[in-house]
Each structure stands twice: as structure tokens, then as C-alpha cells.
Length: 87
Image (cartoon, rainbow, N blue to C red; front, side, top):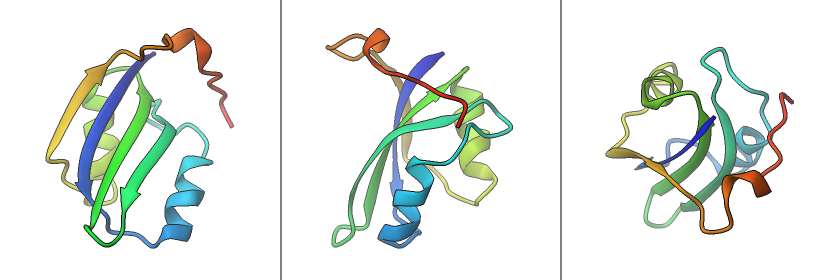
């Protein structure tokens, strides 16, 4: 799996974001690694594990969220340090 970072407006409450980060892998193969957000600024950065960029787009489209940008990233600690599960 690749790792992607995206940014979009925060359409949810803080409790919802905490639920999302613990959600199981969705039908597109996307799982949240972590979410970074600022409710006051209305911005959310999603760090996602996904098979490809199209899966990330579909993941957001299903809840009518339009990302300002999506990019595949590498982590300085290395992706192997992340423990992805199929929650």
C-alpha cells in the first residue's frame, strides 16, 4: 500500500474525526493512518494508506468531500514502521 496526504475542509465534528481514524479499511482499500486538523481554521489533513490516488478520491467522494490536493508521500521513518490492520 502507498501512503497519501490530502487536505480538505473539516465537515465533521472532532468526535467524528476520532471515529474515522479508527474505522476499518473501506471498500476502496483505504485506511486512515492519522488525521491532523484545526477546527478553528476549518482544515483537515488526512494521512491515508491506499492502493492508489483514485481510491483516495473515491473514499472522499462517497461522503461528498472535495480535496484541495492529494499527493503520495514517503515517511522519513519509513512506511515499514506503520502497523496497518484491517480493523
